[in-house]
Each structure stands twice: as C-alpha cells, then as structure tokens.
Image 1 (cartoon, rainbow, N blue to C red):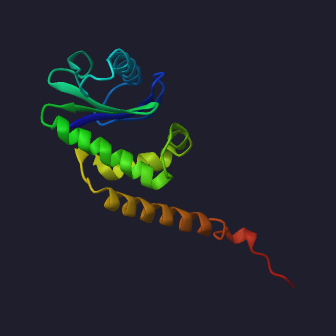
Image 2 (cartoon, rainbow, N blue to C red; image 1 turned 180 degrees about the horizontal axis):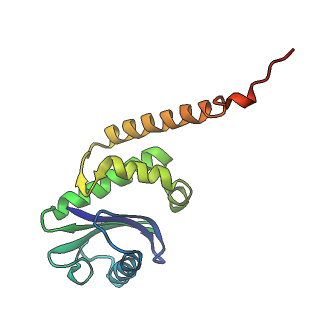
Length: 167
C-alpha cells in the first residue's frame, strides 16, 4: 500500500502532500521534516530507496526521484514494489509534463488542485488505479471540462427574487 505521496522542493518546502493513512497534523509535519532530512543528506548517485521504519513503522520505504528542484516521493509498505513505484513516479511526472508543457515548481504551486486531480486519478486510497499516462490525462481533461461547464452555468442560476417583471 502507498502510505503517502509527496512533492517537495530541494529546500524542504512541501508542494503536494497526500497521506493515505491517518496521521495528525503534527505527525505529518514531523514526517515531512524527517523525509526531507533523509533525502537531502543522500549523495546524488545513491539509489532511490530509503528505509523509513522510524517514520512510518516497520517494513516501510521511501521511493523517490529527484527532478530539477523537486523531489517526487512515495512512502510504501512491503507489499509494493520499489521498481513499480519508480515507474509510477515516472508516469506522474510524464502526465504533469503533458498537462503543463514542461512542468516546473511554479506550475505545481499555482495549480495544486489540478496536480491533486492527476494524483487522484493515479492513486486512490493508497492503491494504484491507473498507470497509463494518456488515460490519466484524458480522465483529468474530462474532469476539467465538467468543471468549466459548471463554472459557466453557476451565474445563470438565480433565485426567484432576482427575476423582475418588466412592465
């Protein structure tokens, strides 16, 4: 099971956080600090897997990938494949690239709702639901179309008191 999905910059500021297990706010913040300190001390040429028993309990690992100024991190238990998670990170980043045309940190900051929608199409409740980037993008675009149509229709819905007879 995926316990958490995070995107943070190289200064340790979390840009996207999604916890799939119940944790209090203080525990989440502590986990983010611990994850950042573990990742920031690792050499560039080390593997992308880190044991995290002190953060999330026994049999848990961090699987991460470092792109430019961002870390994409999944916290997993022993039932998930580390290589599968690296592939999932790649799918997530490819989908973000397709959506934002060369995604950067500012895209994630200013469009966090869209990023959460993309992540929700890939992972739901800690389980992987879709690994095809094209399918994820299609579903997300359909959701955004519905949201835009909903935004267009909202002003046209008025209360009875707003209609007046013109006589």
